[in-house]
Image (tube, rainbow, N blue to C red; front, side, top):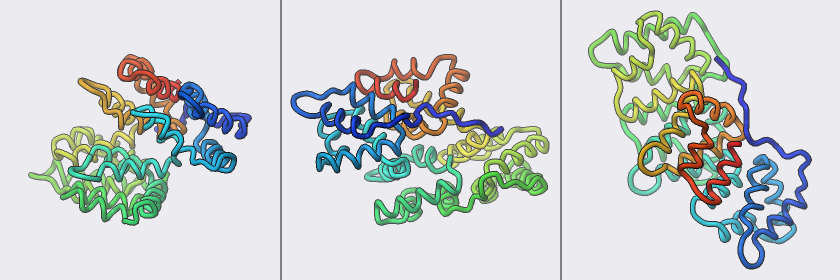
Length: 317
């Protein structure tokens, strides 16, 4: 079930850092801003290339490109462009921090970022978060969440998941039985067992477990989780299950929800489109069209406007 990730943003070949630097400076210098040039350059370079441009900008003009962009742009357009200019792991850390800052916690953002990562990615995020905020991610998260939900996220953040691709078919049969015994087979639910198995297994291992579960109980793991869990824990478990089965479908569903109904969840829209653009936004786009029978671009166009719309569409197409 592993898929070939198709990015929508690939490195520009050849890259002319000098020309990009000069053109970005010209687009922001003097009266008015040339937003189209900014979009054309920043959305059509890989993140590594944007970092080279940023370094060159500082060398040539003694100015911080991100600061200049912030002073010239505004609103959601600014948010999207600044997100593109940050190294990916740093950007996700700012999103985690924002989800926990101030009153209340945006659990949905925590789930989307933490439950979809391999252990290797998690290690990077944990290190980067502490460097940026001088506070361990696990500690900050524990102060903002509670119960079995907190326990699940803590297991994920502390990096207990097996390495990518690690599988043990015999163990999968046993784990499927353990899940069955902890849920459907008894009155009440033993959440600890679900937490342990879903936080520890590699995605490849969990795929086997879920297949065995269906054979054993006649129900899918999703049906079981629906019956046994509620609230944030239910959302987190479902996110893991969906990502095990198909990350592109998981993100396509998140994008749809971000644009469904009244108002648009722009933070989620920007975060997924930017953070997946160099990974698998091509696959997400295909899944979106398959599931919802309309293109992702048409959905984004109907929910956004102006330069913000042009920037997101440039990343998708």
